Image 1 (cartoon, rainbow, N blue to C red):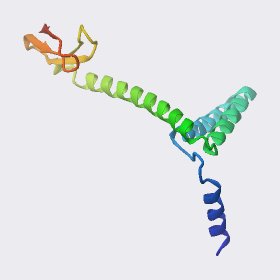
Image 2 (image 1 turned 30 degrees about the vertical axis):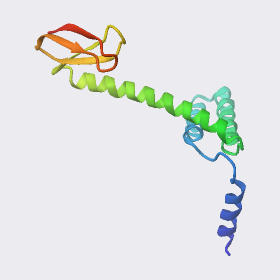
Image 3 (image 1 turned 180 degrees about the horizontal axis):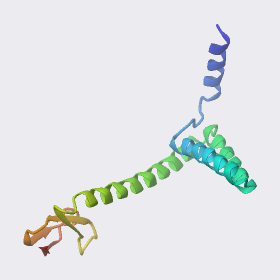
Image 4 (image 1 turned 60 degrees about the horizontal axis):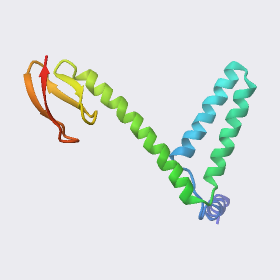
Length: 138
């Protein structure tokens, strides 16, 4: 068995029962790289220390044996990223279709709805809460 194979096996044995790299840990490592580059450009010791602290927390997360807690943290982070990215996608879609549709919020649940522009007075039923109301599409 070669040295690389032994190294790979020992690393695999070390990581048994540990969290490993997840999306949050990887994001923290990239944030640390970004802060280090920014610290080098600005000659800032504070940013260097902050980047080092982020690296330490990311490494501790990777080697943590409390997998359930790390998964909960990762799920929270992933849910927030998904929520933000869906909001941007919705705004981009509204901007792209602004000439064909009129976008507005449901008065009951505040969900976004759309009607074709120039349709006149339309009876609208919200798909989320079922609230019915009239809307004049200009």
